[in-house]
Image (cartoon, rainbow, N blue to C red; front, side, top):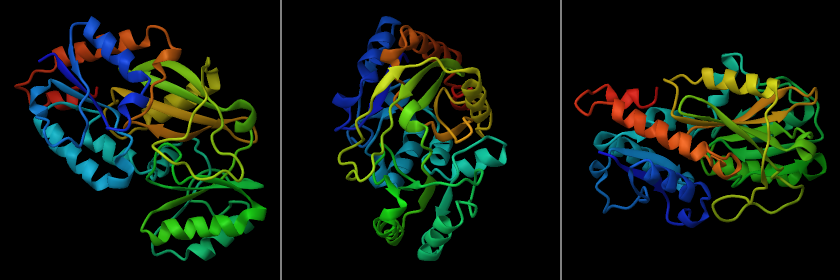
Length: 319
């Protein structure tokens, strides 16, 4: 079937700038396109030849429900990216796997429910981040507190050492709610350079974009689905492309059909991975002429190549 679902959420559909570009490109390539919400109980997912996760940005508050839905959807159609990839990627403990594979990542200390969060926080501040879970130790004057399962910078905040009391309260609130928390040095070069987002579509590098800095000192926590972003086209340099390629190669699954690797520069200017987005990333298609059309053609080739009668065809769609 050449009917494709670009899966979204009710609040997100009108806020997703990629959606009209993807839908138009797929329709021009000969597909029938619909934009159902993942949690709509009236959707028969078996009607689609493929369901492509796009702007399911409300899943964070219902992550278990979302992951269960992914499994059900994948039993009825070809879900991309596949449920195993999504389950791994929705929790930023994947940074541990990337670091073990030799990929440079933002220094991170995870604080788990049941840990002595006060003691861990004090050690983090006192040690210059040497008591890390992953990443290279570094000195810092500012740092970030954010949940390990989160999206759109929700519940993420930047603090200076003078605001340690506020940061501690933020950490304890999240941990007491049963959430794993990340403590990270704030890498100050982002204020000048922004982030570099490197996009892989159809298993290969497609384009890059610049994301402006999101976290402001003393700013209130994000309300709504995501923080407003300043996105511009950017040509990734060789070091960024190499870091992104290393992260993509370290994904412990068959190469996914789409991926976004967000990079920052550390104090030495080395690109390090902030996030690896394989679930519902914005693809910044408006900043890469031809990218939507190329991706649409790749999706339809992948769909045509996978035989519905072959149980392995589901996995083939992520190759």
